[in-house]
Amino acid sequence: MRIGRHMPLNGRPLRALEIACFLGCETVQLFASNPTGWKPPTAGEETAREFAQAARERGLAPVIVHAPYLINLASPREEIWQASIRLLSWTLERAALLEASDVVVHIGSHRGAGLEQGIERLIEALRLVLSKMPAGVRLLLENDVGAGYTLGQRFEELAYVLTRLPEEEERLGICLDTAHLWGAGYDIGSPAGVEAVLQRFAELVGLSRLKVLHLNDSRQPLGSHRDVHARIGEGLIPLAGLRALLNDARLATLTVVLETPIKRDEQDREDWEHDRRHLQYVKSLCTPGGSLSSPQLRQELAEG
Image 1 (cartoon, rainbow, N blue to C red):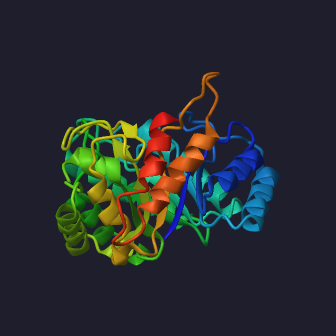
Image 2: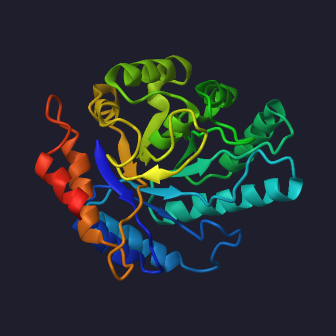
């Protein structure tokens, strides 16, 4: 299991890698373009290659790319659907230049057209995207909290999509987000709950299809269908459950990415020292039979 976090680039990708190393990251996730914009950059190939080389030199692997939030592969609106396919295809091409192993994408919303139609649109879009996907990159569908008309809340939906694309077993997988699981009503707050959820996922989807875990706490209650991330230990998901998840032997080869809020200092700057301690705290949970964390470290985080 390799643990890291989503890194804001702020226009300085190489600096982001330096900070990731300072934090103690073993892996990194990033956006390849504006996460809330449709138009990807027209240049930057050389910068992408420099980033890939720098990540290799620092031992940061794998690199994960998160696709822009606007993508909606289930949209009933033809122009949005086509734009989503174009942007995701571009993202996969850029991921190859970044030497990323995976691209994580939110499935999208049927916007009231109905679950069945939304899933069919999704499958059709995936076929088009995968037909042109560069070698060496995998596409991961992320689970959802189930707000509004979004797809991917239930394991059954994820399983159905994968079974409709059996020829893509090697290139299409799943990313699970713990805050999304919690918001969707999957109780991962205890070891017994984690066991039940993983067993259900194994039966319906298959643990071999799970490649990345987004490790986030949540400020919203179980089954709220709301997605508000919190730092680990500061939200409503009990630590006993998250710890059980991190120590499950079946997940030992997963890539784990924190998407937790970055604390700001008094000058409203990113407090990377606090984030470094937070990542250390998370790693301390990956100790079978140990305490929930170092009490001293938890106190430092609370005071910091």
